[in-house]
Length: 461
Ligand code: F0G
Image 1: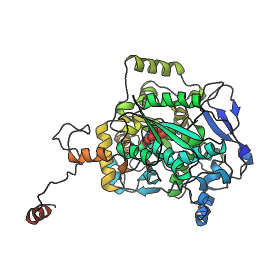
Image 2: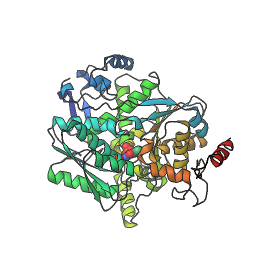
Image 3: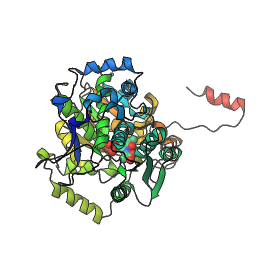
Image 4: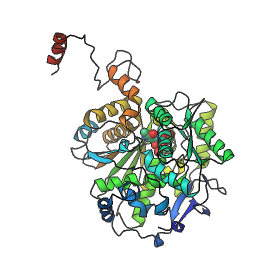
C-alpha cells in the first residue's frame, strides 16, 4: 500500500495544520495540539464489510496476516507492507465470562473480557508499539525512548530486542513500577533509567531529552502508536461476530487507549463499516482521577474541538500548588497528567461516554474475581470490571447490555499485588494486617508431614 494517502494533522477546532508522515512530531509545531494520523480514505481499498478481514487468517503464513493489528492494515494504512515491524502481536481473546458477569450484576452471557495481556510482552501496548516501531523504521530512527509505568517500556524494549532495528532507553519512576515489568525491560536489553519521581515527572523528562537528543519518542503522544491500538476494537468486534456491543469499559491512565478506541469507531462509522457506536466508559483509579474530576465534576467536554482550556489549566495549577501526586496500587494508571486528555474528550463525545473512579479495594476485588473466573489480569485492568460493576449498580449499564471490559495487562506483571491480596498482609489497601480481603485465598502453611497435609485437604470443602 502506498504511504502517501496518510498524513498527520492537528486535532481540535480552528485551522487544521497538516504534516507528512515522514515528519517526527509529538505535537503540532504551530498549534501545540496533539496530532492524529489521518487518511485520504477515497484512495484506500477498504473492504466493503468487516467480515472480509476474516479471510486474512487463512493466509496467516504471512506475518502481516498473522498479526492481530496488521491483518486490519487497510484501517491504518500509513506503512508500505515491506516496512511493517511485527512480532506476532494481537493474538488476543474475547472471552464470555459468566462468573465475572455475576460479580458485576450482569445477566449471564452479557459480560465479555478482552485479554490484551496475551500479547508478546503481556500488555495491550504491543498493539501500539508495532505501529510506532514501524514508523520509527520508516523514518530511520536509531534510538527510541519512552517514559513508563512499566508496560510501555516492556513493549518498546521487546520490539527493539526482537527486531534489532533500534536501541531503546526507558524512563521509569524510581520504585514506581511493578517488578514483572521492570524485569522485562532489563531482560530485553533496554537502557533503563530509574529517575527520581513518578510517571508524570518521567514523561516530562523523556519529552525534553528526546527533543534535545533527536530520539524517537514512543509514548502515546506519538500518533502512530495510537493507530495500532485501534485494532483492539476491531478484534472485539470480530470476537462478537461483527456485532456492536453496548459498552466498552477501559481503565484510564494516560488515555491513549480510550482515544484510540474513539478514533476507531469514528472512522468505522465514517466508512460505513458499522452502523452505530458503542458507549465508552473510562475508569480512573480514585487516587489518579484527573479525567473523572474534570469530566464528571468539572463538566469538561470536547465542545466541537474547543474544550475549556482555562478549566484544565486551573485544575493543574491547584494540583501543583497542593503538590497532589497520583497514588494507587494500580501502578500502571498512577498518572495525574494524562497527555491524551483532549483526544479522550473527543472519544467520550463520539461514544456518548462516561467516566468513573473506583477505589483500590474495588480494583483488587474485581481483579481477584477475574483471576477466579478467568485468565487473570494486573490491578489496573481490574478497574474496568470494578467500573462496569459500579455503572451497573448506578443503573447506567443495564443487566442485559452487552459489555466488554478491556483487560489491559497480564496477571503476572504484578505478582506482588496478587500475593499481598491473597496472603492478607495488609499491603493492598484492604482494612489492615489481619483483615481478610473479600476474595482472599490464603496460602496454607503446613509441616512436611503427610497426616497433617491430609487433614487440611479433608477440610477443603
Ligand atoms: N492498563 C495498563 C495495564 C497499563 O499499563 C496502562 C498504561 C493503562 C491501563 C492505561 O492506559 O494510558 O492508554 O489510558 N500504562 C502506561 C505505561 C502509562 O507506561 O505502561 P492508557
